[in-house]
Length: 119
Image 1 (cartoon, rainbow, N blue to C red):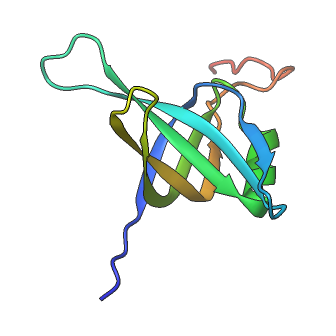
Image 2: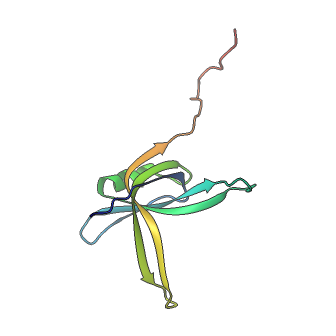
């Protein structure tokens, strides 16, 4: 039986994205999101930083649409990478391979919009 996993995360981009081409010529775009989460006893939120990777056409969209501080929702799958560090210790990280991206705009009153007056 094949395992299926889907993850959806929302957060603010911690840096501008980095676009690269693989040896085979495929576009890959990488960025990370900061996600705040609170618990009942926390005065300040805890922050998790999640690496995101997108490919091909979606990578092109992210390379121009994602900017540092922009709120983004990513739906995709998880991938674990494992390697050995220069100190000889085994390391790993989990990142999201984005399949769908939504750019979330905060509400801002368009410039030139008159103030609403009460009757």
